[in-house]
Image 1 (cartoon, rainbow, N blue to C red):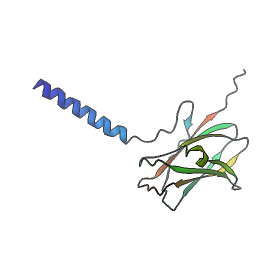
Image 2 (image 1 turned 120 degrees about the vertical axis):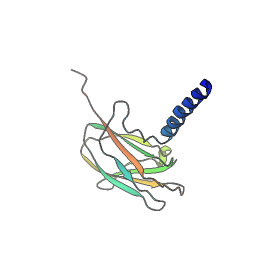
Image 3 (image 1 turned 120 degrees about the horizontal axis):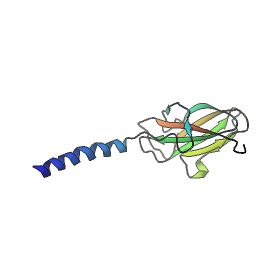
Image 4 (image 1 turned 90 degrees about the vertical axis):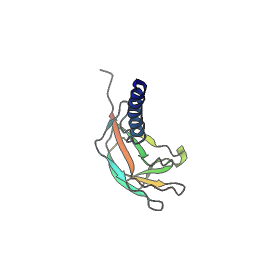
Length: 139
């Protein structure tokens, strides 16, 4: 009876933790970065890219991350400024899921996501924007 109780306790403890770990949301902030406090969820289709507008301020280092609960492996990310000049594109970076950016002046940007290789997304794709301000360490 004691063994049965221990086994039942183990099963009740491990199974919920395992299923929770698989459905954990994407991690937005990381070491030294703070999330901007917004949740950006974009419905990306096979033939329909999705986009959002973002404002990036000067002297702030940003990290832009893209992730999906659907475990989509390849998402194309393109970031352009208000004049449609290319700032970042992950196609030549093995479709990296994150990038770090820093601007010398205010930048009104468009972040565009596109599914690659005819993948499908049943859940929205999440975009996380986090930042780290530059600190002058000379004083």
